[in-house]
Image (tube, rainbow, N blue to C red):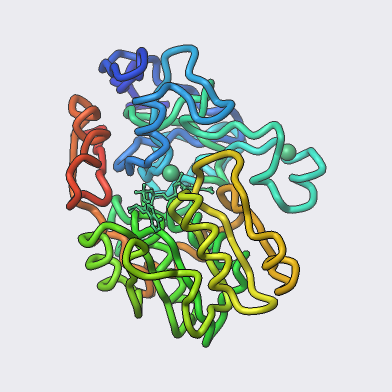
Length: 343
Ligand SMILES: NC(=O)c1ccc[n+]([C@@H]2O[C@H](COP(=O)([O-])OP(=O)(O)OC[C@H]3O[C@@H](n4cnc5c(N)ncnc54)[C@H](O)[C@@H]3O)[C@@H](O)[C@H]2O)c1
Ligand SMILES: [Zn+2]
Ligand SMILES: [Zn+2]
């Protein structure tokens, strides 16, 4: 690894609500891995959740953890089994290590691998540092026309692509999306790119409704003022990107017979659903847990101009100011913060 330093700076979550910039050893790529110099890291709601609460469901932070799983960079070195010409390539990182051997991996659903090691999910460190290692095929080359920030945001775009696939959105589809946070805004753009002709987005926050109207929504609704369950005409698919149980219940009732319900938002573990409506309308209700095989589609959607990720960035920070990046959600105008570990 000629030219690569032995130590690097990393922003470490040392305990709930507390971050410190520490020196860490630069990792060595295993034979099938690449070493990536991190260029840009998007801050995600899950990073904020670990920072504030120290846990998400069963994943509990019990040791110092490096946050960040939305990232891009440049290949600095390769393992012995990787084509050496890849050194220098700009890449977007798919931040997961499935086992590739289990039943789910063999069935092509590697996102459901029970042995998954995912960036910034305890005990696996994430990307708020100068260098990371990843399996070579999870480092997807990106064209020079794509910015480092857009390349990092292919990760939330991948969530939206997985959701649109599950929702079976196709040319002429109508879709309701609850929530106009980063995921909802990217879902609206992705629904448009998949050919949806009617894209209704609900959010109680006026500024969020206004922004999503610029990113693909054809109608925006305030769930506090309108009965979403009475939407007329009903939609072919409902994608929840809010995690709010009332949004899920009303959204299900807005779906036409034989339509689809895709639960992306994560909120309460248990709540009451309108089962007789689901049954009588033969709705297909499914969750989405991250993604499988979405980066090629995501790269195409951005390079073709169908999805704009650069315009979602509302703040930029260096490794010393990760806490500010994580706390930027207190500003209603903030949508997506980016950390540049090399800045
Ligand atoms: N399933 C997955 O793999 C996956 C991946 C990434 C994110 N997520 C989840 O997706 C959700 C969205 O992520 P985000 O980063 O955009 O979150 P966010 O918190 O920024 O956005 C949620 C939005 O929902 C809105 N909202 C609240 N109550 C509502 C209601 N009743 N009706 C409509 N909108 C309502 C909020 O005002 C907010 O704008 C989160 O729950 C997150 O955990 C899931
Ligand atoms: Zn995320
Ligand atoms: Zn597996």
